[in-house]
Length: 72
Image (cartoon, rainbow, N blue to C red; front, top):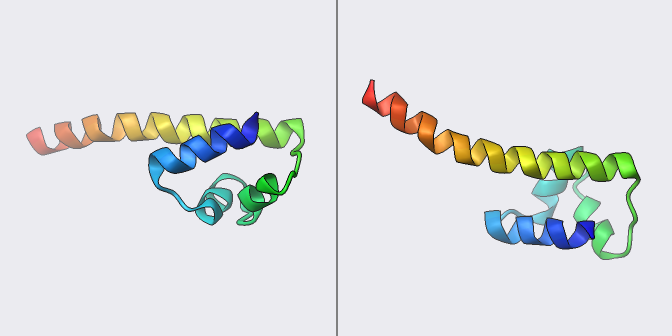
Protein backbone atom coordinates (compact mmCIF):
# COMPACT_ATOMS: atom_id res chain seq x y z
CA UNK A 1 0.00 0.00 0.00
CA UNK A 2 1.41 3.38 -1.02
CA UNK A 3 0.50 5.29 2.14
CA UNK A 4 2.53 2.89 4.29
CA UNK A 5 5.58 3.33 2.08
CA UNK A 6 5.20 7.10 2.14
CA UNK A 7 4.74 7.25 5.92
CA UNK A 8 7.86 5.09 6.41
CA UNK A 9 9.81 7.34 4.04
CA UNK A 10 8.68 10.46 5.92
CA UNK A 11 9.80 9.00 9.27
CA UNK A 12 13.16 7.81 7.92
CA UNK A 13 14.01 11.17 6.41
CA UNK A 14 12.26 13.38 8.98
CA UNK A 15 10.47 15.11 6.12
CA UNK A 16 7.19 17.00 6.52
CA UNK A 17 4.29 15.64 4.49
CA UNK A 18 3.82 18.93 2.62
CA UNK A 19 7.47 19.07 1.57
CA UNK A 20 7.27 15.49 0.30
CA UNK A 21 4.23 16.27 -1.81
CA UNK A 22 5.81 19.42 -3.20
CA UNK A 23 9.06 17.67 -4.14
CA UNK A 24 7.48 14.49 -5.47
CA UNK A 25 4.54 15.77 -7.52
CA UNK A 26 4.19 19.51 -6.85
CA UNK A 27 1.16 18.91 -4.61
CA UNK A 28 1.71 19.86 -0.97
CA UNK A 29 -1.62 18.26 0.02
CA UNK A 30 -0.83 14.89 -1.56
CA UNK A 31 0.10 13.01 1.63
CA UNK A 32 -2.73 14.62 3.56
CA UNK A 33 -5.14 13.50 0.84
CA UNK A 34 -3.67 9.97 0.94
CA UNK A 35 -4.29 9.90 4.67
CA UNK A 36 -7.91 10.84 3.99
CA UNK A 37 -8.32 7.93 1.55
CA UNK A 38 -7.21 9.35 -1.80
CA UNK A 39 -6.39 6.63 -4.32
CA UNK A 40 -3.80 7.93 -6.80
CA UNK A 41 -3.68 6.81 -10.41
CA UNK A 42 -1.15 4.12 -11.34
CA UNK A 43 1.07 6.64 -13.08
CA UNK A 44 1.07 8.93 -10.04
CA UNK A 45 1.92 6.03 -7.78
CA UNK A 46 4.83 5.12 -10.06
CA UNK A 47 6.08 8.72 -9.91
CA UNK A 48 5.91 8.68 -6.10
CA UNK A 49 7.74 5.37 -5.83
CA UNK A 50 10.32 6.59 -8.34
CA UNK A 51 10.83 9.77 -6.34
CA UNK A 52 11.39 7.81 -3.13
CA UNK A 53 13.83 5.41 -4.82
CA UNK A 54 15.72 8.28 -6.43
CA UNK A 55 15.88 10.19 -3.17
CA UNK A 56 17.30 7.11 -1.41
CA UNK A 57 19.84 6.56 -4.19
CA UNK A 58 20.94 10.20 -4.13
CA UNK A 59 21.44 10.10 -0.36
CA UNK A 60 23.62 6.98 -0.59
CA UNK A 61 25.74 8.40 -3.42
CA UNK A 62 26.17 11.90 -1.96
CA UNK A 63 28.27 11.00 1.13
CA UNK A 64 30.79 9.08 -0.99
CA UNK A 65 31.01 11.96 -3.47
CA UNK A 66 31.63 14.39 -0.60
CA UNK A 67 34.43 12.23 0.80
CA UNK A 68 36.29 12.10 -2.50
CA UNK A 69 35.82 15.84 -2.93
CA UNK A 70 37.66 16.43 0.36
CA UNK A 71 40.49 14.07 -0.53
CA UNK A 72 41.44 15.92 -3.72
